[in-house]
Image 1 (tube, rainbow, N blue to C red):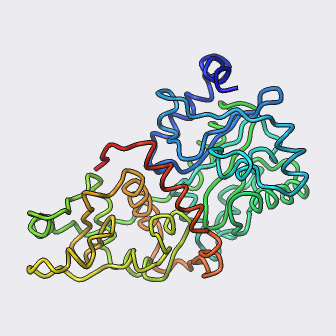
Image 2 (image 1 turned 90 degrees about the vertical axis):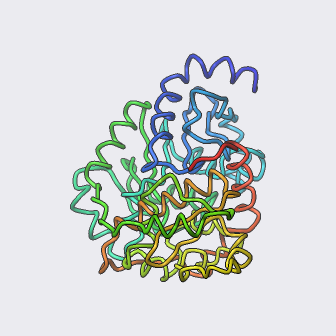
Image 3 (image 1 turned 60 degrees about the horizontal axis):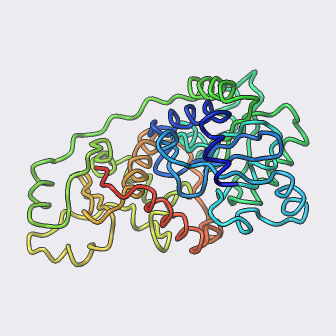
Length: 348
């Protein structure tokens, strides 16, 4: 079927691929290989492969063709997760197969996440999305559990085409790539949040710290707000807000995102923090490890965008310890390895 995929992707899927590339190039919608997209054509589900970057849609073969009938009959009806049966398929294959829409898009839109991590999210979003066919999905682990949650929502509201996932992101469904893109633009317009301003980074001090070390300044200057903005530091110290934060850390430990003091000049801090992909320096900004991979850098940028859209008094819902544990080490490891293998070049 792979040979057939290479041929068909240049014809019947061209609109989907062009839409996918536009979404993937927008860091406010996707970070690294996060998010996924699919289109159902006849009995085939064409879905973004796990670890592939949507930004590469027009440059490489990022879609995997799966037999839709097999997904439904052999997996969903038997309560089996398709991602376990089809190695390399998206971790959210079950969700794409379960939803009836021809085209399904799942993105980690930073504006949506900034609403979705609030305890009062439904009350806040309800008036903003009035008139649209949307549903709120309480936090549910990815894979088959999330697919079941979406199925239950649609049983109660068959017209639903917009799903806000608590502490996760956004799912949209429609009859064509153009229809889903129009829906995406409308949701983004209604849920847009201007980012909070932050004090500038202490560039001279950061450069001094990095000099002669394995640390450099990030290309995305926006991430410095994580170190210079007290509100951001307070938010991050509270815990993990959404799964991608756990994917940045082998242990899912919130301590990775807490600011550390200004390093001493003796260089001992290098040994202490050398295994981290980045460091948030209190009152200074952010520095990144030269060994940090593109996926890690993209995710820290996404985190900065989300946090800068949260108010100081916003009532936040952090992931519980049980929810963090549900993001299993095996899934996290598989995600990171595939994501990093997809794009090896430095992105700074």
